[in-house]
Length: 205
Image (cartoon, rainbow, N blue to C red; front, side, top):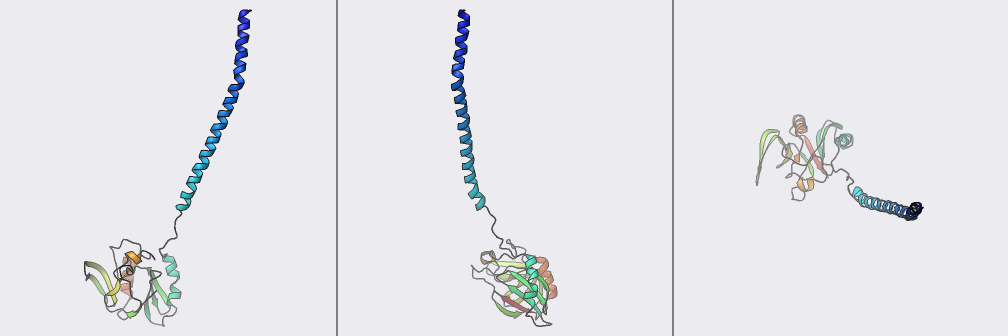
C-alpha cells in the first residue's frame, strides 16, 4: 500500500506541475509570435523607404526613335529643294532635311556649357568636307575621320573617344565637346556623304 500511495502522490505531483507547464509553454509561444511580428514589421518599415529611394529616374537620353519621329516637324519650315542640317541643343539631336522631307536623324553631343564651350546658335553653311583630319588646340590634338566645319572652328565630326552617351540632354552641359557637334561614327559617315559645301546648318536651342 505504501508503494501505491507513493505512486499516487507522484502522479498527483505530475498533474500539479502539468497545468503551470502548459501555461508557461503557451506564454512562450505567444511571446515568440509577438517577437516575430514586431521583427517583420520593423524590417518592412526599414525596407520600404529603400525601395522608394531606389526608383529609377527618368532617362535624360533622347530616344533615337523619338528623334526620328520629330523629323517631319523639324524639317517642315525648310525651303523646298534646300538641304538643311538642323541641330537642337535642348534635345541633343540632329536632323538632315531635303526640302521639307527628313532624310535621316541622329543623337549628338554639343559643347560643354559649364566650361564655356557651348555650341553657338545661328545659321551657317558647310565650309568644307575633309577626312582624316587632326583637330588641334590648346592642350589637345584629336584625330577624326570626318570633318564638316560650318563656322570658324565649329563643325561636325566623329568622336570615338567620347565616354558619355550621345543624345544625353544633361551630360553635355558638363561633359560635352569643345564646341563642335559630335556625331556617332556611322551617322557621321552618312552625314559626310550626304552634305555638300554650302549645305545650310541651323543650330537652335
